[in-house]
Amino acid sequence: MERPVDALIVGAGFGGIYQLHRLREMGLSVKVIDMAGDVGGTWYWNRYPGAMSDTESFVYRYSWDKEDLQTYPWSHHYVKQPDVLAYLTHVVDKYDLRKNMQLNTELLSADWNEDTKTWHIEVSTGETFVARHLVTALGLLSKANYPDIPGLNSFKGEMCHTAAWRPDIQLAGKRVGIIGCGSTGVQVITDIASRVKSLTCFQRHPQYSVPSGNKPVSPEYRKWVNENYDDILCQVKNSICGFGFVESAVPFHQSSPEQRELVFEELWNQGNGFRFMFGGFCDISTNKEANEAACQFIRKKISQVVRDPEKARKLTPHDWYARRPLCDGGYYEQFNRENVDIVDLKDTPMTAITQEGIQTSDGVVHKLDLIIFATGFDAVEGNYNRIRIKGRGGRTLKEHWDPQGPTSYLGVSVPGFPNLFMITGPQGPFTNLPPAIEAHVELISRCIERAEKDRLDGAQGVIEALPEAEKEWGQECDRAADGSLFKETASWIFGSNVAGKKYAMRFYFGGLANYYKYVQSMMDNGFRGFKSPVDNA
Ligand code: FAD
Ligand code: NA7
Image (cartoon, rainbow, N blue to C red):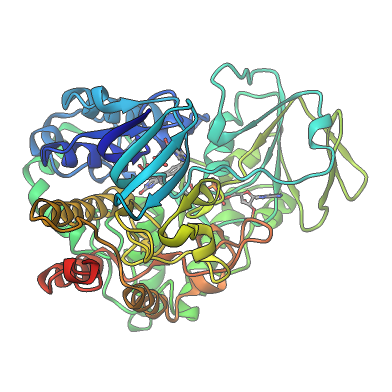
């Protein structure tokens, strides 16, 4: 028996929780499903030691409950995984959202029925749902990426991916190997180095990391934030990355070498990766000279912090500073510990995982009790490709995205997939995510509102992006990334981290303010780019 709902939402993280609240406010019957055992999304799965936001606490939360913004406690300038999980649980409980949720339930397939104008949805429990609207809040970073290393299953010790961390894993006295030194690897290494017997870090590419500047929040700071939340949120919406600091408008070449050094030093002392990249000069990610100066500054810091010149050499990056910028709570310092070592996989690639540990091309077997995979995610479309979503005429979403890579209109809608709405779908804004998620939820809610009104007026109640709008948005994304060094630097953002994955424009780099403007103008112009009810008749 198919269970009818007005809207089915998949995912109970930041996106799904807010979407549920909005659609319930609109009077719709809504069900949220999630394959996880509880709410939280990213923060349910990523329980690895040291897991923390790199957005500062005051803007890593929802903006729509002012009273909650001013009263909900946070002790530090950054929120750790248990804090974010507790926060999202608190929101769910405060708004009594659990009653519309079904956990431990995976979406397997969704088929659009053109006759009934509904989605027919199969889930892992054997149940089926029928819904007029399907909202996928699957997350950008929720399909874990496991490396394909020969002998992986022969290892006799324990293995764990950071995105599926088991809290029962014991670290004390263990010989630990970690593969991956990205944002996650940096956090894990910093957290566990002092607690394990030995830590061997297997690094393919070193990354530039700056201090986070984390510290306890003073009552004066919190008072200032509370008194200024309206201005803060307005600044966030009118900014490029939405991280709660004013981005610089000063081009690098306008400062003298001495001033540049002072600016970098001040940013280093203040902390935060995005602030370091966007807070001092406006062209670090676009101007090669500016970028190289930032690189040189961080390289100098690495050489000052890391005492062993060989370890420092391995940890020093030489490519552009143009991945998602990292920050840490003392990463480079950990390599001054006797028990922490680094293996440069460019010098000595991994050849196999054996019963005892990881073997590298120099013949050395690094003996280990625990291997941690901090190898990131099959980001953006990874989650979509494992579900069979069939739109008009039985065409799957995967087919629609092959071979050019994933596309959409505004990151939310795809032609041929009526009443399917993605929160942080491909080609959404590359920013602090809560404000971007809120922008998507607002847009999706307006689309659903429009379709429902249309239906109640006797029409079909269907809304869907036009192919030309998807194309135009893709061109807008290309334009926004023009000249960006991010495009020239291999990372998950363009799909380079997963073998065989298509290099594609997966994000809108035009910033939050421009995204909001684009969406507003679309709405002011009668939902330009979406098929009108007349087109659908
Ligand atoms: P998610 O939180 O990823 O939730 C998606 C949910 O969908 C998951 O619970 C998953 O189980 C569920 N799901 C997926 N597929 C299915 C299916 N087929 N069936 C059922 N359920 C399914 N962003 C920032 O802006 N700032 C940060 O500081 C920051 N730090 C991060 C740190 C880590 C370690 C990671 C991994 C990500 C971080 N992010 C950060 C990005 C983070 O993912 C977002 O900020 C935000 O939590 C995403 O919320 P979401 O609801 O869109 O997706
Ligand atoms: P990332 O940033 O994709 O980092 C993954 C790391 O794992 C990175 O250092 C990779 O090296 C490394 N990796 C991946 N596969 C392999 C194999 N096969 N062998 C060796 N090393 C490998 O993921 P994170 O989880 O750290 O961060 C993702 C986002 O989550 C981050 O931006 C935050 O938003 C939170 P590479 O650099 O590809 O050579």
